[in-house]
Length: 225
Image 1 (cartoon, rainbow, N blue to C red):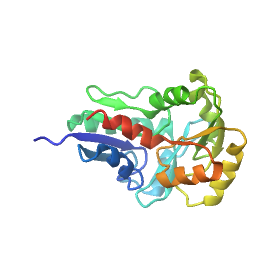
Image 2 (image 1 turned 30 degrees about the vertical axis):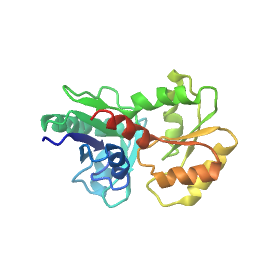
Image 3 (image 1 turned 90 degrees about the vertical axis):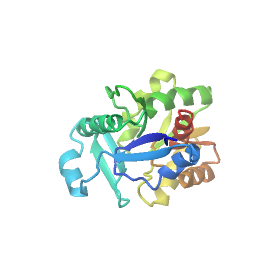
């Protein structure tokens, strides 16, 4: 019997031992998870020299294979990301999950189902929260302003706070949760790098329900098998 394969492309480096177990939990052994990364084969210095954000560029962050955080420009990584999608398609993979909640205008797949979290999460969350106040936790302070446009078309006007999933800094989570606690009723972790442990921490600090983006997407992808 042919083993089904699900592709997962991180904008950092593969494999992703922090996030892959969450996706694999929902795949439940029914498919093999094939991973690739935009930054595969690059050093941290090469990423900084070639892909660092310039003025006015859309800022993203992800994880290097050694656990370090990398910050990069969407405009500079998008051509590499598109090639990774094409490589997966050419290998016969029919379902591809983009492991990033950022907005990437113009990505495409010829035959495969390309699942982009920014197309799924905002409308889904809008349906879930309805009249409740939404708090959104993002990795970088620079993203608090840039990500508003992702939510406004869906009638969402969240309050933002920042704490990176790629730095072991509990104090930054405490400060971010203090910002959200008085202004929100439910919290979305808007980065595919947040883990179940991060969800538990934010829930404990805020006393509110917390939505984990990668778990939401993993459940959806598991239905594609």
